Amino acid sequence: MTQLESIAGKVAALLIARKETIAVAESSTGGLIAVALLAVPGASAYFIGGAVVYTKASRAALLGIGDAEMIGMRPSTEAYALLCARTLRHKMVATWALSETGATGPSGNRYGDAAGHTCVAVAGPAEKAATLETGSTDRRANMDAFAVRALELLLDALSAKA
Image 1 (cartoon, helix red, strand yellow):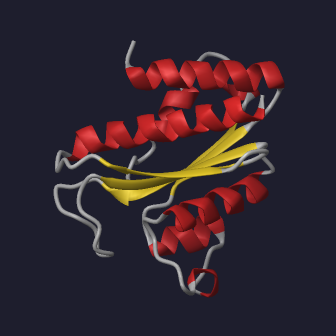
Image 2 (cartoon, helix red, strand yellow):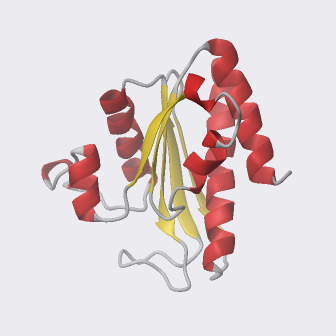
Image 3 (cartoon, helix red, strand yellow):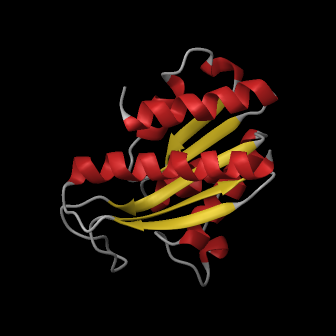
């Protein structure tokens, strides 16, 4: 069992036991977070839905976050990740929402962040945000590391709420 599968299993067990739900908005993980949560048997009890919000156009279409909401904010920050999580939670009527935004590599993003940079956030009964810098340019390894960190943050938020 991978680290991602292990953490997703723990998250799923807590959500199922509490009869709570989760929605996911991810960018540079490309759906890995949703895959990990959906791979756990019984996912239909807690997984509401998710989206890969990879561009400005998808952010506007899927989350309804336009230029007005982005004034004074840039993607790939904790504030932006939290905005996405809060917005998705409201749109999906979920107990929790998890958001990820970053630069997987091999180069950095257009906002000046180096490869290996991500920000993740959880919105729900408890809110948390975190930044991870892997220092790696390995795209796939970063995607995995970002997904693990996002689910770790969600597990921390779920545990804080207990």
